[in-house]
Amino acid sequence: MNEVLIGEVLRPHGVGGTLKVYPLTADPERFSKLQEVILHKGEIDQRFKVISAARVQTDQVLLSLEGIESIELAEKFRGWEVRIDRSEVPPLEDGWYYFELEGMNVYEGEVCLGVLTEVLETGANDVYIVKGSKGEVCIPALKSVVKKVDVQAKRMDVILPPGLLED
Image 1 (cartoon, helix red, strand yellow):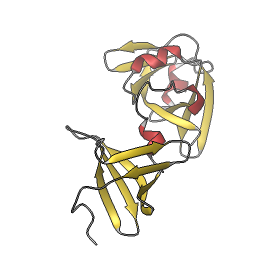
Image 2 (cartoon, rainbow, N blue to C red):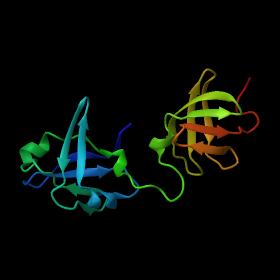
Image 3 (cartoon, rainbow, N blue to C red):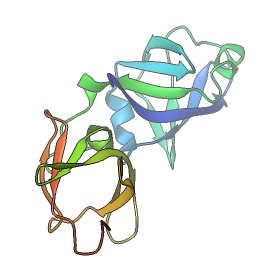
Image 4 (cartoon, one colour):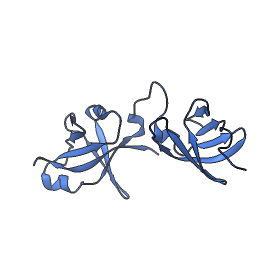
């Protein structure tokens, strides 16, 4: 995955082509630092340079892009995803982004339990959905369970709580 989803175009804002975007990131302020975005829908990717710094308004972002300078052009991008190149994602001080975890092989010892397909946010802790030969396993994202994460090798090592996996 070379692109990372950070938002969705809701609708045009004003008549000058500005896009109103719903941010899908914990830090909407990241939009104000962008130089370029990728608008994506289906099999189509279109790259645009950001004209001026994005403005965060409450829980939405106003984004002005080069080449989208009218309400009619902006309307064509309603519902499109806003993505950035993975290289533009700032590193976290601690932990991992969900997109780095999804697709990882999850092991208990030398036994591959399957592939981490989804991260669910719950109130107490995240839950990793792992699909493998024994079906679907829900693994709590706890330090007592997740022992090692190697993002480069796409491998996670876990020690499952008793009774979580039935033989």
